[in-house]
Amino acid sequence: MQVIVLVKATPSSEAGIKLDEFTQATFAAMGAFNEELLKAGIMKDAAGLQPSSRGVRVRFRGSERIVTPGPFTETGELVAGYWLWEVPSLAEAIAWVKRCPNPMPEESEIEIRPLYGGEDLAGLVPSEVQAQEDRQADQLAMGKASVQPYLFYGGRCEEALEFYRQALHARIGMLLRWSDCPEPPPAGMLPPGYERKIMHAEFSIGGMTLLASDGCGGAQVAPGGFRLALSVPTEALADRSFAALSGDGGRVDMPLARTFFSPRYGMATDRFGIGWMVMVPGKP
Image 1: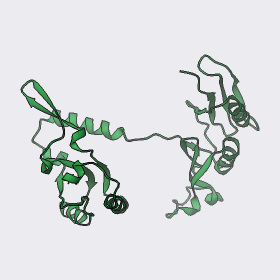
Image 2: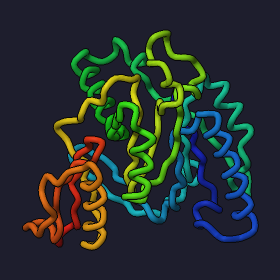
Image 3: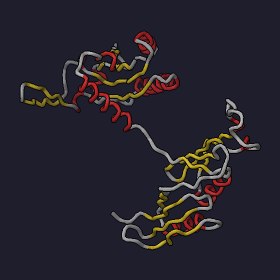
Image 4: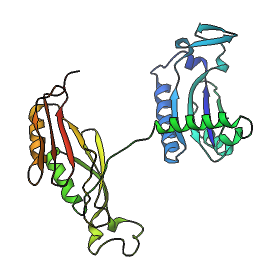
């Protein structure tokens, strides 16, 4: 179940953050508590709220909308911060809140409220409304999704990683060989001698992280229908990167040249069959 955990406001939180000894100690204690929540896989989101003097309220009265600027005096009705947790039960949420440091210098209160789930609304809303809510939930979830290129090198992955490290200053992250797999692959899945080949690797070029593997054996299938776009800040770096990618078994598909959208743009395929577009971003 998901619960929202509300830290109720107090006169201290409404006065704003003060860099005093208590605040510094509280930040440290809350940081440690949040680390525990993250390690337990419970915390999904969290934030502190600025004092109500920085906010407004909008009252609905028929078709009228009345905007009232803060501050608001009913401190007990205000919220100073929140967590969003995923917990097995309300009892576990209560147990975690009991472990929380007091967030305020004075007596304070934290409120736990379960969120409505689909099972809570089953039969209470028309099916078309439920379908709409399901679509909206999927849309929100997909907003947090990511797509990463996954490249297969047919037994040459280690060679490719070293090539990109030298040619493009790639940074190699996780690297697992088939022999590192905690569960051995099914019999006959890998050809003889493939145990030291790379099952999964991650490497970064600039701010982009790519995934790579040798696959399960067999000839490499040349990727089609896409290229990796490499944007670099200077023409000299574009020249060096393009020469490295297109040389030593690679090929030039479109020579580097000035275009209407870039002072330096060209296309090459490296010796592993991966297509690249190398460019220097043009002015807007």
